[in-house]
Length: 155
Image 1 (cartoon, rainbow, N blue to C red):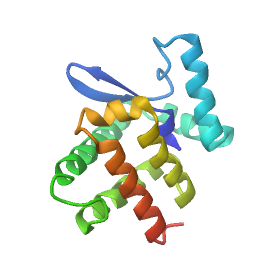
Image 2: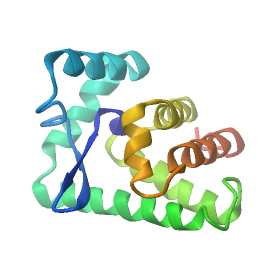
Image 3: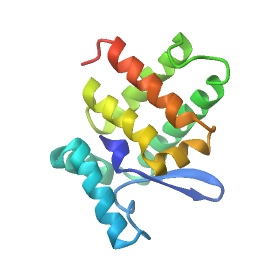
């Protein structure tokens, strides 16, 4: 799962997502090993390598476009969560877009999407990242993703 190999940083006040090219840059060796191991344990070495390879093939413009799409989607979900439940049609339409966007760089099925949802709501770095959009977004997004995976035929 691609998103599991991503890290988040702020650049000029804008949230950015870094690929595996520099995801571990600046972290202690211990944290680098921990994140790499966690990702491989959740999704397998094959999936990790496949996603890393695709990300590394992207040029700057393609990567920026992907980041902007993901960032805009998270903003829309954060705004929409104020007046919609995670299982509402509006949120689920946004989750379909998220599912497809994640799948651009690494094929995603129901099981891996639920794993990603769990990662979003359990991992302190993802919780912190999503709190930058809206407090509680990680949990809300996780619930919406799991609902989608269990109620849609997308395998």
